[in-house]
Image (tube, rainbow, N blue to C red; front, top):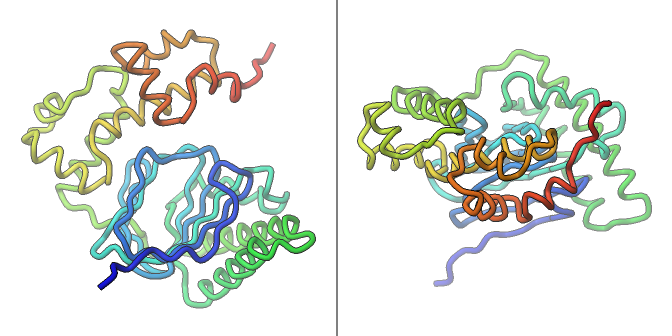
Length: 286
Protein backbone atom coordinates (compact mmCIF):
# COMPACT_ATOMS: atom_id res chain seq x y z
CA UNK A 1 0.00 0.00 0.00
CA UNK A 2 1.36 3.42 -0.96
CA UNK A 3 2.30 5.76 1.88
CA UNK A 4 0.11 8.88 2.26
CA UNK A 5 1.75 12.07 1.02
CA UNK A 6 1.50 15.70 2.05
CA UNK A 7 -1.13 17.63 0.10
CA UNK A 8 -0.23 21.24 -0.85
CA UNK A 9 -3.47 23.18 -1.29
CA UNK A 10 -2.26 26.69 -2.15
CA UNK A 11 1.05 28.55 -2.10
CA UNK A 12 2.23 32.02 -3.10
CA UNK A 13 5.58 33.82 -2.65
CA UNK A 14 8.22 32.82 -0.09
CA UNK A 15 8.85 33.52 3.60
CA UNK A 16 11.25 36.42 3.03
CA UNK A 17 9.18 38.13 0.32
CA UNK A 18 6.73 40.94 1.04
CA UNK A 19 3.83 38.46 1.18
CA UNK A 20 3.73 34.67 1.49
CA UNK A 21 0.70 32.40 1.73
CA UNK A 22 0.91 28.64 2.21
CA UNK A 23 -1.87 26.14 2.88
CA UNK A 24 -0.95 22.49 3.29
CA UNK A 25 -2.37 19.28 4.71
CA UNK A 26 0.49 17.20 6.11
CA UNK A 27 0.31 13.46 6.61
CA UNK A 28 4.03 12.84 7.16
CA UNK A 29 6.26 13.91 10.08
CA UNK A 30 7.56 17.45 9.54
CA UNK A 31 9.84 19.70 11.57
CA UNK A 32 11.79 22.88 10.85
CA UNK A 33 15.30 23.69 12.06
CA UNK A 34 17.05 27.04 12.54
CA UNK A 35 13.82 28.86 11.91
CA UNK A 36 13.29 32.60 12.14
CA UNK A 37 12.90 35.32 9.54
CA UNK A 38 12.67 39.06 9.01
CA UNK A 39 8.94 38.94 8.25
CA UNK A 40 5.90 38.73 10.51
CA UNK A 41 4.11 35.38 10.59
CA UNK A 42 0.53 34.29 11.20
CA UNK A 43 0.02 30.55 11.68
CA UNK A 44 -3.47 29.02 11.78
CA UNK A 45 -4.05 25.38 12.67
CA UNK A 46 -7.13 23.86 11.04
CA UNK A 47 -6.79 20.25 12.19
CA UNK A 48 -4.48 18.05 14.25
CA UNK A 49 -2.32 19.11 17.18
CA UNK A 50 1.13 20.71 17.27
CA UNK A 51 3.64 21.73 19.88
CA UNK A 52 4.99 25.22 19.23
CA UNK A 53 8.20 26.53 20.76
CA UNK A 54 8.31 30.35 20.62
CA UNK A 55 11.25 32.23 22.17
CA UNK A 56 11.37 30.89 25.72
CA UNK A 57 7.99 29.19 25.99
CA UNK A 58 6.28 26.06 24.79
CA UNK A 59 2.65 25.93 23.63
CA UNK A 60 0.29 23.17 22.60
CA UNK A 61 -1.72 24.31 19.60
CA UNK A 62 -5.26 23.05 19.01
CA UNK A 63 -7.44 23.48 15.88
CA UNK A 64 -8.82 27.00 15.71
CA UNK A 65 -5.73 28.63 17.21
CA UNK A 66 -3.93 31.58 15.62
CA UNK A 67 -0.22 31.99 16.35
CA UNK A 68 1.43 35.41 15.90
CA UNK A 69 5.21 35.31 15.41
CA UNK A 70 7.17 38.54 15.64
CA UNK A 71 10.07 39.32 13.30
CA UNK A 72 13.28 37.44 14.21
CA UNK A 73 11.63 35.41 16.99
CA UNK A 74 12.95 31.84 17.03
CA UNK A 75 10.08 29.41 16.62
CA UNK A 76 9.46 25.83 15.70
CA UNK A 77 6.40 23.61 15.44
CA UNK A 78 6.68 19.87 15.94
CA UNK A 79 4.52 16.84 16.53
CA UNK A 80 2.12 16.46 19.41
CA UNK A 81 0.82 12.95 18.95
CA UNK A 82 0.41 11.99 15.28
CA UNK A 83 1.97 13.88 12.36
CA UNK A 84 -1.26 14.64 10.47
CA UNK A 85 -2.36 18.26 10.55
CA UNK A 86 -3.59 21.03 8.27
CA UNK A 87 -2.40 24.59 8.60
CA UNK A 88 -2.21 27.96 6.90
CA UNK A 89 0.84 30.21 7.19
CA UNK A 90 1.10 33.86 6.15
CA UNK A 91 4.35 35.83 6.19
CA UNK A 92 4.51 39.52 5.33
CA UNK A 93 6.68 42.56 5.79
CA UNK A 94 5.56 45.90 7.13
CA UNK A 95 5.37 47.49 3.69
CA UNK A 96 2.67 45.05 2.55
CA UNK A 97 0.28 45.94 5.37
CA UNK A 98 -1.81 49.04 4.69
CA UNK A 99 -1.85 51.83 7.28
CA UNK A 100 -4.81 50.31 9.12
CA UNK A 101 -3.07 46.96 9.41
CA UNK A 102 0.20 48.51 10.53
CA UNK A 103 -1.49 49.75 13.70
CA UNK A 104 -1.88 46.08 14.67
CA UNK A 105 1.80 45.15 14.24
CA UNK A 106 2.72 45.86 17.90
CA UNK A 107 0.43 42.96 18.80
CA UNK A 108 3.11 40.59 17.48
CA UNK A 109 5.38 41.56 20.36
CA UNK A 110 2.74 42.00 23.07
CA UNK A 111 0.99 39.43 25.22
CA UNK A 112 0.39 35.79 24.42
CA UNK A 113 1.38 34.83 20.85
CA UNK A 114 -1.36 32.18 20.71
CA UNK A 115 -4.95 33.33 20.18
CA UNK A 116 -7.62 30.59 20.52
CA UNK A 117 -10.55 31.60 18.33
CA UNK A 118 -14.21 31.13 19.13
CA UNK A 119 -16.39 29.41 16.45
CA UNK A 120 -17.69 32.67 14.97
CA UNK A 121 -14.16 34.10 14.87
CA UNK A 122 -12.89 30.96 13.17
CA UNK A 123 -15.54 31.37 10.46
CA UNK A 124 -14.55 35.03 9.89
CA UNK A 125 -10.86 34.12 9.72
CA UNK A 126 -11.37 31.19 7.35
CA UNK A 127 -13.44 33.41 5.04
CA UNK A 128 -10.47 35.78 4.68
CA UNK A 129 -8.03 32.89 4.20
CA UNK A 130 -10.23 31.41 1.47
CA UNK A 131 -10.31 34.74 -0.37
CA UNK A 132 -6.52 35.05 -0.04
CA UNK A 133 -6.07 31.56 -1.44
CA UNK A 134 -8.32 32.34 -4.39
CA UNK A 135 -6.61 35.66 -5.18
CA UNK A 136 -3.10 34.20 -4.86
CA UNK A 137 -4.02 31.24 -7.08
CA UNK A 138 -6.00 32.96 -9.86
CA UNK A 139 -3.97 36.21 -9.86
CA UNK A 140 -6.58 38.28 -11.64
CA UNK A 141 -6.07 42.00 -12.29
CA UNK A 142 -5.44 43.85 -9.04
CA UNK A 143 -4.93 40.69 -6.99
CA UNK A 144 -1.95 42.08 -5.07
CA UNK A 145 -3.95 45.15 -4.01
CA UNK A 146 -6.77 42.86 -2.91
CA UNK A 147 -4.32 40.70 -0.93
CA UNK A 148 -3.18 43.84 0.88
CA UNK A 149 -6.77 44.71 1.73
CA UNK A 150 -7.44 41.18 2.97
CA UNK A 151 -4.30 41.19 5.11
CA UNK A 152 -5.30 44.51 6.64
CA UNK A 153 -8.79 43.16 7.38
CA UNK A 154 -7.23 40.07 9.01
CA UNK A 155 -4.88 42.14 11.18
CA UNK A 156 -7.69 44.39 12.36
CA UNK A 157 -9.82 41.37 13.22
CA UNK A 158 -6.96 39.78 15.18
CA UNK A 159 -6.56 43.07 17.04
CA UNK A 160 -10.19 42.76 18.15
CA UNK A 161 -9.77 39.07 19.03
CA UNK A 162 -6.85 39.85 21.31
CA UNK A 163 -8.82 42.50 23.19
CA UNK A 164 -11.24 39.98 24.66
CA UNK A 165 -10.25 37.84 27.65
CA UNK A 166 -9.26 34.26 26.86
CA UNK A 167 -7.71 31.31 28.66
CA UNK A 168 -3.89 31.18 28.48
CA UNK A 169 -2.61 28.88 25.75
CA UNK A 170 0.74 28.04 27.32
CA UNK A 171 1.65 24.40 27.59
CA UNK A 172 0.91 23.11 31.11
CA UNK A 173 4.26 23.52 32.85
CA UNK A 174 5.56 20.54 34.76
CA UNK A 175 8.98 20.45 36.47
CA UNK A 176 10.64 19.01 33.37
CA UNK A 177 9.29 21.70 31.05
CA UNK A 178 10.19 24.38 33.56
CA UNK A 179 13.74 23.03 33.79
CA UNK A 180 14.14 23.06 29.98
CA UNK A 181 12.88 26.64 29.81
CA UNK A 182 15.43 27.57 32.50
CA UNK A 183 18.13 26.10 30.26
CA UNK A 184 16.83 28.13 27.30
CA UNK A 185 17.08 31.32 29.38
CA UNK A 186 20.59 30.33 30.50
CA UNK A 187 21.63 29.98 26.84
CA UNK A 188 20.19 33.42 26.05
CA UNK A 189 22.16 34.96 28.93
CA UNK A 190 25.48 33.15 28.37
CA UNK A 191 25.71 32.50 24.63
CA UNK A 192 28.90 34.56 24.40
CA UNK A 193 30.66 32.04 26.65
CA UNK A 194 31.59 28.46 25.92
CA UNK A 195 28.48 26.29 26.39
CA UNK A 196 28.76 22.52 26.31
CA UNK A 197 26.41 19.69 27.11
CA UNK A 198 28.63 18.81 30.07
CA UNK A 199 28.48 22.39 31.40
CA UNK A 200 24.67 22.45 31.22
CA UNK A 201 24.51 19.00 32.77
CA UNK A 202 26.61 20.11 35.74
CA UNK A 203 24.79 23.44 36.10
CA UNK A 204 21.29 21.97 36.11
CA UNK A 205 22.05 18.58 37.72
CA UNK A 206 20.77 16.50 34.81
CA UNK A 207 22.66 13.67 33.13
CA UNK A 208 24.04 14.63 29.68
CA UNK A 209 22.07 11.91 27.89
CA UNK A 210 18.77 12.78 29.57
CA UNK A 211 19.32 16.52 29.12
CA UNK A 212 20.07 16.13 25.41
CA UNK A 213 17.01 13.94 24.82
CA UNK A 214 14.60 16.05 26.90
CA UNK A 215 15.73 19.39 25.44
CA UNK A 216 14.99 18.09 21.95
CA UNK A 217 11.66 16.63 23.04
CA UNK A 218 10.47 19.81 24.80
CA UNK A 219 11.82 22.54 22.47
CA UNK A 220 12.17 20.71 19.16
CA UNK A 221 15.84 21.81 18.91
CA UNK A 222 19.08 20.06 19.70
CA UNK A 223 21.17 21.97 22.25
CA UNK A 224 23.98 22.78 19.82
CA UNK A 225 21.57 23.99 17.12
CA UNK A 226 19.79 26.26 19.60
CA UNK A 227 23.06 27.68 20.96
CA UNK A 228 24.31 28.39 17.45
CA UNK A 229 20.97 29.90 16.42
CA UNK A 230 21.03 32.25 19.42
CA UNK A 231 24.57 33.32 18.55
CA UNK A 232 23.81 33.89 14.87
CA UNK A 233 20.76 36.03 15.69
CA UNK A 234 22.93 38.27 17.87
CA UNK A 235 25.60 38.37 15.15
CA UNK A 236 22.94 39.53 12.66
CA UNK A 237 21.97 42.36 14.99
CA UNK A 238 25.58 43.49 15.39
CA UNK A 239 26.27 43.24 11.67
CA UNK A 240 23.32 45.49 10.85
CA UNK A 241 23.57 47.94 13.78
CA UNK A 242 27.32 48.37 14.41
CA UNK A 243 30.63 48.85 12.62
CA UNK A 244 32.31 46.11 14.66
CA UNK A 245 34.66 43.97 12.59
CA UNK A 246 33.31 40.58 11.63
CA UNK A 247 36.19 38.77 13.32
CA UNK A 248 35.35 40.60 16.57
CA UNK A 249 31.62 39.83 16.23
CA UNK A 250 32.50 36.16 15.84
CA UNK A 251 34.42 36.26 19.12
CA UNK A 252 31.82 38.36 20.96
CA UNK A 253 29.02 35.94 20.07
CA UNK A 254 30.82 32.88 21.41
CA UNK A 255 32.41 31.30 18.35
CA UNK A 256 35.83 29.82 18.95
CA UNK A 257 37.14 30.72 15.49
CA UNK A 258 36.25 32.89 12.51
CA UNK A 259 36.13 29.75 10.36
CA UNK A 260 33.47 28.18 12.58
CA UNK A 261 31.50 31.44 12.61
CA UNK A 262 31.65 31.79 8.81
CA UNK A 263 30.56 28.19 8.26
CA UNK A 264 27.68 28.39 10.76
CA UNK A 265 26.49 31.81 9.55
CA UNK A 266 26.39 30.75 5.91
CA UNK A 267 24.63 27.48 6.73
CA UNK A 268 21.99 29.31 8.78
CA UNK A 269 21.44 32.51 6.77
CA UNK A 270 22.36 31.19 3.29
CA UNK A 271 24.86 34.01 2.74
CA UNK A 272 28.16 35.17 4.20
CA UNK A 273 28.36 37.66 7.06
CA UNK A 274 29.88 40.31 4.78
CA UNK A 275 27.06 39.84 2.25
CA UNK A 276 24.50 40.15 5.04
CA UNK A 277 26.07 43.39 6.28
CA UNK A 278 25.99 44.92 2.80
CA UNK A 279 22.31 44.05 2.41
CA UNK A 280 21.02 44.91 5.88
CA UNK A 281 23.35 47.56 7.31
CA UNK A 282 21.22 50.24 8.95
CA UNK A 283 22.07 53.91 8.37
CA UNK A 284 23.91 55.47 11.30
CA UNK A 285 22.83 58.70 12.96
CA UNK A 286 25.29 61.57 12.60
